[in-house]
Length: 310
Figure 1 (cartoon, rainbow, N blue to C red):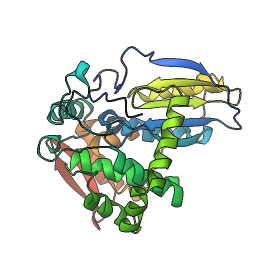
Figure 2 (spheres, helix red, strand yellow):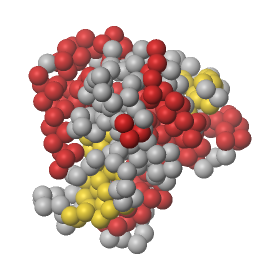
Figure 3 (cartoon, helix red, strand yellow):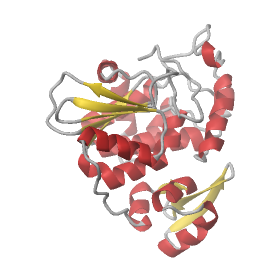
Figure 4 (spheres, rainbow, N blue to C red):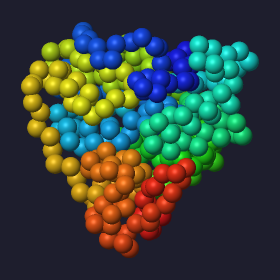
């Protein structure tokens, strides 16, 4: 999927990819299916995938019992070269990405610094993608998802180059795994092979932009939703693929249990999960969490909470 190279995303639609695709497209698949599957096509350096996290988390928490969740790497950036990467959007060099990322962060309120792409730019999204695939193969989907989340925190909010070996090792080590061993395997042929298997699946799903969510049902029909959308959008898509008028949403987990799992949450993520106004976020956190369990921090004008043990 290295020919995507769509480094600028539309702020209103949240699409990083080919413009003009339908917002929600009914699609038909030939392969057989035994269950409802949700395919999340993404990339570690996709800014609108980062912006989607608050909504996607709530969608999975409340409606995940209807589907099997699969994360697929899409290959946003193989490498920079002398020519323009995304000329239609004015992306000729890494520094061109910095301004766009900052706009996405301000629009979505999922903070993005972006200056890294001027000072020490990510040269390829393939290295962290390969690490994700190796963790997914050797451990669990949940562990791979945590790696992806920690990588995005490091890149977008804390301005670290997640394609650098030392940074990847540190992130993996913090998951309780052997970072050097995981990164070493990811750098071998197996890492590239696993990544290209994802690329093949992306093509078979007809995906050309990120983020894209494809949901398929037992009748080999599906819904493809391109871009970062509202919760209602994904719920309506799930209704279509299940051919149901109403869905039974699971109760939202308490902030205490969610925080136990996530370890770091930005204000926007709490607001979306619990329908809390931004102005009420501090008082809500105080009501829901013991004071000795969390710290309130601020970055780029946005609040976030971390555990006191971090």
